[in-house]
Amino acid sequence: MAASQVQDEAFVTLATNDSYSYGALVLAHSLRAVGTTRKLAILITPNVTSRMRQLLSDVFDSITQVDPLDSHDEANLALLTRPELGITFSKLHCWRLTQYNKCVFMDADALVLQNIDDLFEREELSAATDCGWPDCFNSGVFVFRPSEETYRGLLQCAVTQGSFDGGDQGLLNTYFSDWATKDISRHLPFIYNMTSSRAYSYLPAFVRYGDQVKVVHFIGIAKPWQFTYDTSSGMVLPHESMSSHHELTFIQAWWDIFVARVKPKLEAAQTAQTMSS
Amino acid sequence: MAASQVQDEAFVTLATNDSYSYGALVLAHSLRAVGTTRKLAILITPNVTSRMRQLLSDVFDSITQVDPLDSHDEANLALLTRPELGITFSKLHCWRLTQYNKCVFMDADALVLQNIDDLFEREELSAATDCGWPDCFNSGVFVFRPSEETYRGLLQCAVTQGSFDGGDQGLLNTYFSDWATKDISRHLPFIYNMTSSRAYSYLPAFVRYGDQVKVVHFIGIAKPWQFTYDTSSGMVLPHESMSSHHELTFIQAWWDIFVARVKPKLEAAQTAQTMSS
Ligand SMILES: O=c1ccn([C@@H]2O[C@H](COP(=O)(O)OP(=O)(O)O)[C@@H](O)[C@H]2O)c(=O)[nH]1
Ligand SMILES: O=c1ccn([C@@H]2O[C@H](COP(=O)(O)OP(=O)(O)O)[C@@H](O)[C@H]2O)c(=O)[nH]1
Ligand SMILES: [Mn+2]
Ligand SMILES: [Mn+2]
Image (cartoon, rainbow over all chains, first blue to last red; front, side, top):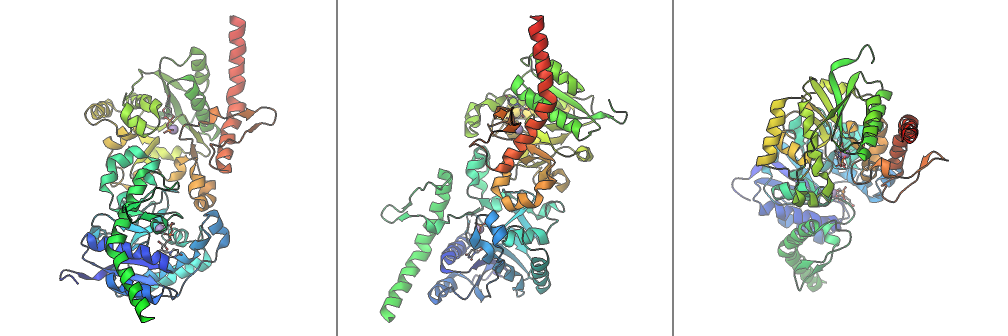
């Protein structure tokens, strides 16, 4: 632990299974690589394996097991074409981390490219625009203040109003409904949550602002850990689901961290397991 | 002219040819249909035909001919895959309409569904987020104050800094560069400039907020007037470029106005022309 580490502020992520844990590991290593002075915390659910918990504990300062929360809202999730995302309600548990004064939640499919500790100067609820409907914020990166009261309020909102997309994002946008109109300082610049397909949507803007990107967020069904990495060349193989070579570059950056920081430990753990069995 | 018409405020659009003039006509009729109390003004370039000017004069309060301005920026326009958009620099002429105190510029490919006169309560430069890169605003709908000084400043900016996308949007975002961070009241809700393909991107949000949409903006290469309308059924034919049946519904709404308000006059003008030749 660095001497200058801030004790009461943390980056928080979530993994409900081993796949998303790969994302969480790379995210955490990317935060360490840019020299964050904040704690790293993760919420996991019971079915994350003990081998994975071991790997997580190498890089996270704290691991908190939580009960899975699921919206079970099949109708709205179908609109999103993401039936699996009801489980993202588990994210709400982050408000219960009251040992911290302020936190930044980050999805496990995010990758940090430049230091973002300045996010802790922002107030709850700060988030970047969701490109799908820009009066909503994207819930992949947000600044919040842990509070049991807010947690209860969110659960109450889930029961009374539900989530319009069946996932955490619809619920959080309903609860923090003044985000779009109230305070510009709650609007994080897009470079703090750059959804990786954007390079394609408005390429001139990407060419102009792309080098300022601090966080890439791999939204959608195709996650970085699902692509094929060629160990001999050290390159991710292009895939038709990628919108541009820029997206490939970001996925490559994810794998570079995975191969350097996660894979060796994974292999060591595997060897240990083989030897002990 | 309605007795209650506000004399010093106007909606302004632009058409550099007869095709976009179809858009401008439908836009103007859609504004009349929702009972705007503001003036309707259009900028045209010399190659809009005299027959078209006649039709425009039926619905617009004023027609101003301007010299075409073109960025001639082939490199950046290629990034946008829209080589034709250099001409949108002509939009800058709107700042010279100093007979008005405040204006709302609207692209000719926009369609008004509900009254938006409340936009005149906003200040320059108010605009909605561009979904392609949400720290930029979309220049299809914006509130501005005509001013020769601003016009000169914009031309100066075009010469010294250029437009990062080769069109007006890149330039305006460079000139009004504090839009993203300065004042939340300059951020128009997305319902004032709903790009028609958004229904597809985040369908649950569209289902939730879609009935609040006040302005649909048909961005991209496929404009409403380019689709096929079946006169016998009164229906627009679906086309593979449409992202969803919601998009089809909006294009149908465009054609409903075109057929009711523009086509009869077009045919009358054609008959008159045939008779006089
Ligand atoms: O099965 C799942 C699905 C999601 N998540 C967590 O919830 C976040 C949001 O889901 P996802 O990133 O897949 O949604 P998207 O960003 O694609 O909308 C993930 O990043 C994970 O932190 C998880 O742990 N398990
Ligand atoms: O050849 C052209 C291209 C554009 N425009 C005007 O410039 C606006 C912006 O262009 P467009 O709407 O095609 O851009 P998009 O919204 O698709 O980015 C149009 O709505 C018209 O008002 C025009 O008059 N002639
Ligand atoms: Mn995500
Ligand atoms: Mn347009």
